[in-house]
Length: 147
Image (cartoon, rainbow, N blue to C red; front, side, top):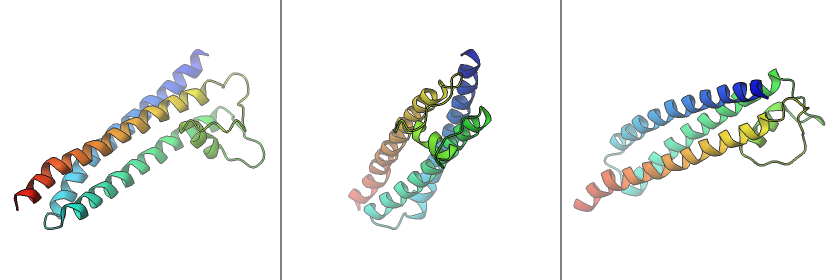
């Protein structure tokens, strides 16, 4: 059990780092997008900011799911019926829980750990989206209203 917590904790920590780096890139990217769309209408600018943000967040989540896929493969979680390990990692990360695969004894903590990690990171992503919209309202909306 301790080794599962250590391995799952290491993947979770790595995922937090990935999400942190992507969060910083999003903050920089949204500023550049705001500058690049300076002459556009507020709605066009907001859409551009949100598209950049969601694209980067999606990339982060897929990368994080791939980290869990690697761990699941490494510990020998072998799903039946043509289901891929990536699908199982994705299912656990999103806490969807079809229940179609039950890992063998000795590695069953990885599913709930992936779910907790995914839920935390999905919540973090929601915060980033709201923060980008708030930043757009403060920075972009204020300028448009004074015009």
